[in-house]
Length: 326
Image (cartoon, rainbow, N blue to C red; front, side, top):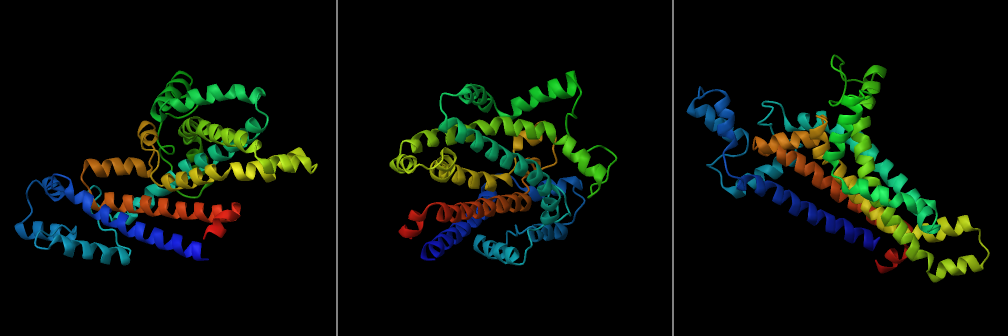
């Protein structure tokens, strides 16, 4: 319990620091996003209206930076992320709620699939090193070294242009209304095949190599030798003794990758014009959309911290030494 309380306190302080940095960095960027918004109306706004816009977006020059910081925390506690410059007057929370499910569905599914597939192959490859599975490693390593966007371009060129098996982009067919209907879900899954396969092919090799190397190391440990000497079955030794300890680094890496799911895979979403949060973040940065950038960074930050906390809890369950150290 002491260890758990210490970790929660650590992540609480980290969250405070991250939110503070999230407030400061956009305000250090050059340019004035409100002026860009005013330009859309071709200078037809009055001085009073311009002042109201600055106050509305928390950029009131009459307030000190400290007062703006306190106002920012106040709005966060009320669940208000502000209004988006880019999609004005749509609230930031609405913009994020529209694009976040797309990223969670695509990157979340592919990350879980990559982890399970890569870890499973790594367990057998490391336990039975020298088998035919080792011949897959150079191929997997080659694909993992190719950037996401390059694999995406190749996939579009081959499977969407030369052989039009899959669509080249977008999240669903034109003319469909998003909703929990069979036609829409089937269309969304069909459009996610190419970007999803791109992510899996690029990511799976890292899980394979990491797990294989740990299995090779753990296989020579004394407790594995003792388990063999006790006459335990090879399957039980492989999973209950070797794999259980070898998987710890992969669990940590998987928890971190869960946090970055929310950030999406920006280049993949750009290549496939996929309506995820990464593409929205790119638009927000280009428009200097402070509220939208802060909202997205906040979601990403809290997701990463929550994922790390889950990783610590997993370590507590898998490694009793962690609990004793607490």
